[in-house]
Image (tube, rainbow, N blue to C red; front, side, top):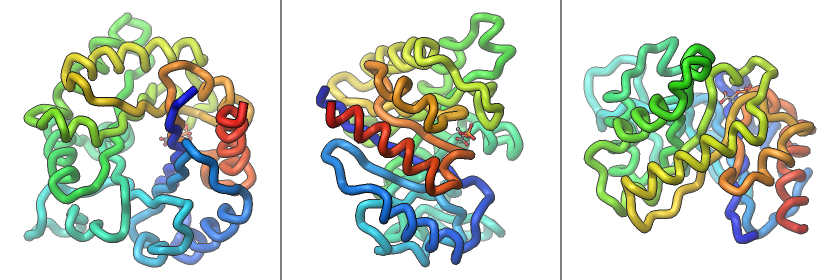
Length: 251
Ligand code: PEP
């Protein structure tokens, strides 16, 4: 199939430093390296330093960052502080946008700062249930993508991973059907092709992914991975999702 998959776990505000280390060591025992499959977890900031170099097969990401390099920004974490600790940084998660009122402009500044400091952005986009029901899904996604990528060079666009996360599917147990997800992923690919000619794009689906639905979602043409919240907090469940991806690659 030739797809390069990314299976990513967003731990949100769960697990302290010790629990995070224990999880990685446990998870590492459950899978063998598979060509075409990258596994990553996004623990809380406080766990990151303790995870450095723990297991090379499990990449580490941060769940957020501020866009300034340093300064009087109490409580914030800069891209420079993340250098050497993480490969990826999650940006524009709907919980950041909705609860912490991050704007498209903030997300754009964060994407630019991440790239400037060699961190790989995983850019989250997605519509509310109201927007979906009003037929505004594609317009919302296109707008989020265009605003997040404002001012980027074509080559920088090639370093971004997009995560399509319908807000109505996050933490609700109600996932988008594989067909609904594929439709939006296909649309995102088209938008990206226009914005960044010649650049490949990896698009993850996120929203109530679990072992029971991961295989079917990953089998869709334009889905090249999943961003898993709740099910990534449990070694057996996250491992089962990784295995479903390996199964697909071994077909
Ligand atoms: C998420 O937090 O990005 C997410 C998709 O959560 P869940 O899998 O729990 O819906």
